[in-house]
Image 1: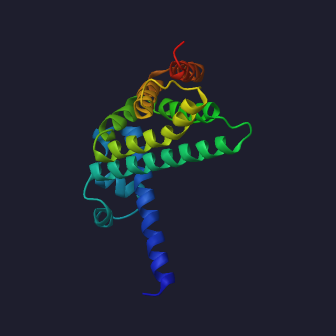
Image 2: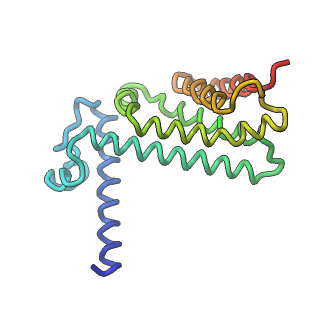
Image 3: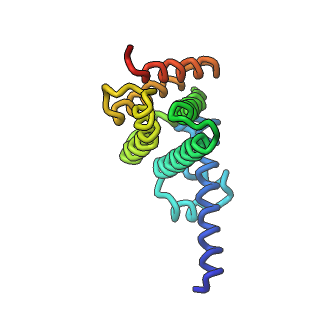
Amino acid sequence: MPRLWTETIDEHRRAVRDATLDATAALVAEHGLAGVSMSRIAERTGIGRATLYKYFPDVDAILLAWHQRQIAEHLQQLTEIRDRARSQAPATPATVLRAVLEAFAFIQYGHHAGGAGAELQAMVHRGEHLAHARRRLRALLADPLRAGVDTGDVRADLPTDELAAYCLHALTAAADLSSKAAVRRLVALTLDSLRPPR
């Protein structure tokens, strides 16, 4: 097949896939998980059911693909924030760590939707793809934590991998908070707990 034709087909497939994921998330938000079917998704997306089944075998597969896309977008966002914080003066391990932890906490806070949003999060927050994402998040935090240990800004009595896991678990509590000010206080508390013991 000519390259242009192949690129056009791949682009079309990506567009159909993205439209399917977006439509499914919107339907879950409107009707809850029980109110979502392949027929409704096909209708909302504007494609035939037979075409939809060529892309996904069932609603669960669509929801898993949606969640994997969300995770990839969040990891990309956090990486960009870390890199931007590193390039701004004065860049210190503490400022980089604060930027990444605050961004992660606000992502969690964004999951505060409740209702169908909470139902969707509970369903997709399982499986190997989530374990892989957690490993990548810990690795993303490991560099600024190690650099903070080297400068004396971060405690050295615990391995950085454990500190990274602690930060991520602590900041998932942001999903239950009711204001952005509360999220910032949680980030400050987490950062305080990383300081070397007196």
